[in-house]
Amino acid sequence: MKMPDFINSRAFHIKDNTYSVCLVEDLKNHVFYILKNELAEKWETAEDKDKFLFEIRNNKNLKCAINTKSKNYKYNSANIGEFFRENNIIASLHLELNYKCNLNCKHCFTPKNMDKYFISFDKAKKIIDEAYISDVYGITLTGGECTINNDFLKIAKYVREKRMPLSVLTNAQKLYDDENLFNELLNIYPESFKISLYSMNSNEHDYITGVKGSHQKALNIIKLLREKHINVLIACPQLSYNIGSHKEVKEFADEIGAEFLTGCNFIFNKNNNNLTAKCTFDNIEQFYCDTLDMNNIRNFQKSDGRICGAGETMLSIRPNLDITPCVGFNYVLGNCNSTSLKKLQENILPKFREKFIKSNLKECFKYDYCRYCQYCSLQSTHETGFLKKSPILCEDAKAYLIAYLKHKQ
Image (cartoon, rainbow, N blue to C red; front, side, top):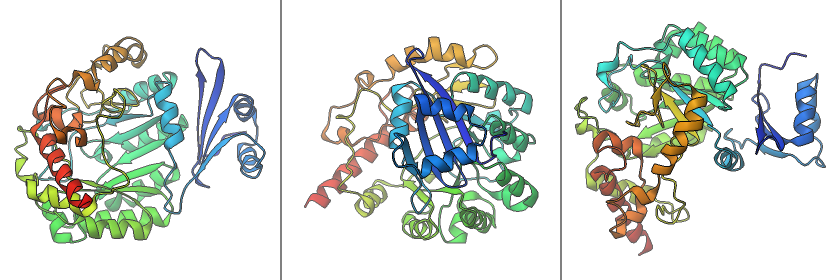
C-alpha cells in the first residue's frame, strides 16, 4: 500500500547494523515516532501505514518513544536531537537554491557577487538522492529567497517523494503573490516554515526589508499557515532599526501558536556594508535585561568540547555547490562537483570535527564573560575567520553578563 502523503519515514541501521531505527513523522496528527528493532521492521512491512500508526498511538504497552506536539505544534525534539548527535547523522541539509532575493534587507549578509549562481532541479535531484543514501534525515530549502527559483516547487516535491522532512526558509512574499504555488506546496505536507517578522509595525518592518507591503504579505501567510496547523517559526532578530519589537512579535507568535526566535545576533559582511544594522551595546544589554531566563543561563565553558552542531548534525550547500558546515559559515568543506556526500562524511567531516572544538579557540576563555559567549561560527567567520575571536560575540557576551548580574541582584 502506498505510504500516505502526510508521513515522513526514514530507516537507519545503527552501530554496524546491530539494530535498526525508523523515524516516522505523522504530519496530520502531529506525532513523532522512534521505532526500534522489531517495531521498525513491522513498520517497514506494514501494508496499511495509517492503521499501523493508529494502533501504536493507542497501545500504551508498546515500548516506543512517541513525542506529541504541544498546543503550539512544536516537537519535543530532545530525544531525536541526541539520537542524531550520537550516531553522526545529518539532521538537516540546507540547500541554498540561489542568493537572489525579492527583498532588499538592510542587514543582509548573503554575498552579492554570487547572484548568478542557482541550483537547478537536475543538480538538486542528484544532491537529494545522495543525501538519501547517505542517511541525511531532512532537507531545508533556503536562499536568498528560495521560492523565486524557477525549480523551487519541483525540488520541494522531489524531497517529499523521498519521504524526507521538508522545511522552507522564506520571506513569504511569493507565497502570497502566487496562490497556486502556496496551495501546491501545502499539498505535499512540508514540516515547517521559518519566516522573519521584524516588527508588528508595518512601516518598521517594511523599512528593514526595503519593500513596501512586505509586512502585510508575511503576516497573512503566517496566519494562513497556522490556521492549517502548519509548524511556523517566526524569527525576529533585533537590529538597530527595530530594537524592542520582539515583545509584540512574541505576543503575536504565542497567540497563534507559532515558535518564536529572537536575539541580537548580527552577521557582519563588509562586502554588503551592513554594519549600520547592528545594535549598540546599550541596546543589547537592555535586550538581555528584558529577556534573560534565569532558569536557562548560558554556560559555554561547561558544555562538551563541540562548539555547535555545524558539520555534525547540519550541512549546507551554496548555489555554486560549495559545501559548508552551516548556512553562512565561511568554511568550505568541498564542492558537489568533485566531492560526494558519502566521501565527505567518511573522510572530510571527521577531520573537521576534530578541529572544530572549544580547545582550539586559542584566544578565548580568558575573561569572566567568556562563559556566557554564544559562540556562533556563522556570525564570527564573516568577521574574523575560522576559529577566531569575534569582537561582535565578545560584546554580546559582556552585555549578557551585565544583565545576568543585574538579575541576580
